[in-house]
Amino acid sequence: MTTFAVRPGSSRHLAGTGTLLRLALRRDRLTIPVWIAVNALMVLSMPGTLEGLYGTPSERAGLIRQMETNSSLRAMVGPVFGDSLGALTAWRVGVYAGALAAVMSLLVVVRHTRDEEESGRQELVASGTVGRRASLTAALLAAAVANAALALLVTAGLAGLGTTGALALGLGIAAVGMVFATTAAIVAQLTESARLARGLTAAVLGTAFVLRAAGDSGTDGGTSQAFGTEGGSSVLTWLSPLGWLEYLRPYADERWWVLALFAGAAALQGGAAYALAGRRDLGMSFLPTRPGPASGRLGSAGALAWRLQRGGVLGWSIGFFLAGVVYGGMTEGAADLVGDNDNARRIIERMGGQSGLTDAFLASMIGMLGLVAALYIVSSVLRLHGEETSGRAEPVLGHAVGRLRWAAGHLLIAFGGAALIMLLAGLGLAVGYGRQTGPILGACLAQLPAVWVVGGVAVLLHGALPRAAMAAWGVAGAVLLIGWVGPALDVPQAVLDVSPFGHLPKLPGGSMAWGPVSVLTGVAVVLVTAGLAGLRRRDMST
Image (tube, rainbow, N blue to C red):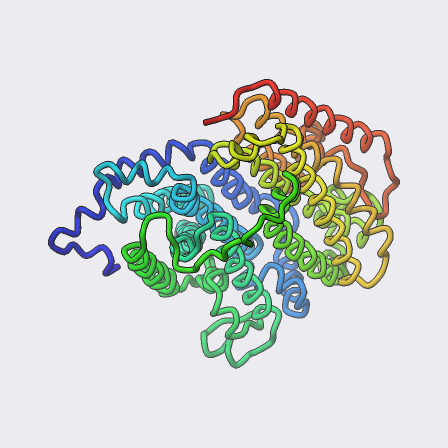
C-alpha cells in the first residue's frame, strides 16, 4: 500500500501506534474473542453436521442437483462448486462467516476511530506524542489481529479435510473482514457520528450481500463461463466481496488470484482513508452535520432517546422485513431440498418442532430471526451505557429529569423496537410465503419473551455492574451460538435449555405454551427492575 511509504518526517504520523494497538486490544479483550469464537465454532461445527446429512456420494449428488434448480436457496447460501466435505462446508457457511468477520471488523475500526473522537478521548490522547494517523493505524491493526486469529482457527480446525482448502477458506474469511475494516475506516473519516459510521458501513455490507444473492440466483451462463465458474452466477456476484469469497473456491480447485482482489480493495480503501485522515481536523468530518433548529423541539427525555435511536430502529426494521421476504420465498424450496433426507429433516424439526416440514422450517427461520433480534436489543439497551460514559447523559440529568425517566425512553425503544422488528419480520415472511399470515405473525411475537430476557440481562449489567456492561454482548453471542449450532451438533437438551429461546413453543405448527412464555416475561421484568434499581442507587460514570 503506497500510503505506508516512508517519506522524510512521515514516521512521526505513526508515533505511538504500538501503544494504541495494545490499548485497543486490551479494551476489546472480551468482545473480539467472543466474535472470533462464535464465527469459528460456526465454521468448525459444519463438517460433522454435513457428514451426517450427506454422508454418501448419492446424497451429495442429489444436493448439487437441487441447488442447480433452486434459485432461492442459491441466493441464500451460494452455488456449490464440489461434492467433497470441505467444499460443502465452504458452500454452507463461507458467506455467513465472511459477513460476521465484516461486522466484527467494522465495529472494531469505528470504535477505535470515530467513537474515540466523538467521546473526546482522542483529543486527550492526541495531546501526547501520538502521530496524526496512529489511531487509524492501530484500529486497522486491531482488526487485522482479530481476522488473523480467526483465519488461523479456521485453517487449523479444517486442516483435516485438506490443508490447502482450509487455508483458502481461512484467508478468504479474514480478507472479507479486512475489506470492510478499510471501508469502515473511510466512512469514519466522512461522518461525524460513530452511530452513522456503523450504520453506513453496515449498509455497504448489506448491499454486498444483496448483490451476491442477486448474482447467485441468476442464470447468466455467459458470465459464468467467462470467469470459469459454475452455479448460475452473474457479474453482480463479482461486484461483491462476499462473491469473491465464493469464487476463491476453497476445496474446489482454489483460485488464489482472487485474493489479489481483496488485497487491492483493502489497499485502495486504506489509502483513501489515510489520505482523508490527513486532510481534516480532529473531531471534524467531510460530510457536514445538519444543524438543529434554532429553538429546541425535544420536549422530553423519551423524545431525545427516539432522536438518537430512530436511525438504528429504521435500519433493523428494513433488514428484518427483507430477511422475512427472502426466508418466506424459499420455504417451499427448502422443503424440496430436504426431500427424503432423514438427517436434514431431523435437524430442521429439532429447531422448528415436530410439525410438518414446511411449518418446522418456518419455525426454525423465525427462531433464527429471534436470535438476531437479541443482538438488536442489546445494542439498543447499551446506548444508555454509551450516553453515560461519553458524558452526554450528564447535561440531561442536570435538569429536571430523573435517572429512571431518562433510562425509560431508551428502554421503551429497545423493548418496543424488538417487538416492531419481529412484527415486520413476520409480515415479510407472510409476503414471501404467501399464506398463514396470522400464525406466522403470532410465531414471531412469541419470540419476544426470550429476546426481552436477553435485553433484561443487558439492563441489569448496565445498572448494577456498569464496568461489565459490555459482557451483555457475550451473553447475546452465547445465546446465538447455542441456538444456531446446538441443534445441528445434536447437543443435549439441557444445553439448549440454557438459552431462553430453548423454552419457547415451536410455532407455527406447534401448540402455544403460555406457561414458559409467562415465566420468561416475568424473568425479563425482574431483570429490568433490578437493573433500574441499581442505576438509581449507584454513582454515574464520569
